[in-house]
Image: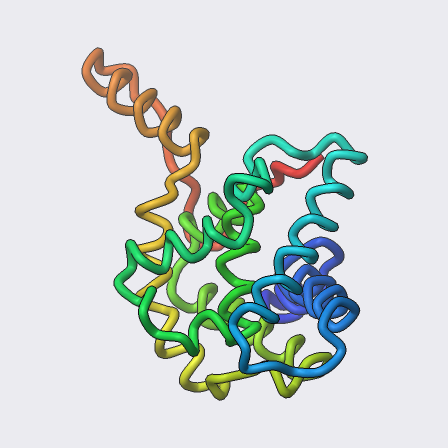
Length: 199
């Protein structure tokens, strides 16, 4: 399979996850809304639904949106503040944007994958997310495809640096310690590698 096809269609991967988010969002907010509070309530229900399912499946670890009563949507907004886009309402009402950062906060697997991969991977992933939302919730989009990609490519770098996973930090620490003793240590994967961390 080509990389684009994997990103867009592989079960449990980026396009498929964006589709699942969009279907849940449509369930909780039947019509599009420019009201921030309506959007926030619906998206909070989406996150709660996904956390409940992950708890049932025993996959809660690494989810930075948990615990939901303390974090949830506010954790996404907090990231926006740190990226200096917190005052820009359109980011909070654009479903592809919210899904992108919720997906990354939710999954250590996705954080590690995005951290390891290059700009081409990021571009194809952003396109896959946007296209899935367009299919299901076309009226809850504030940026067209080109704008969405252009705005979020540089923001992704900031976001990933803010939320380096525990696994990444352990790997980097292990590599630094091993290098001190001349033992070679951790060797990052080459571009194009995608870690299989899901259980």
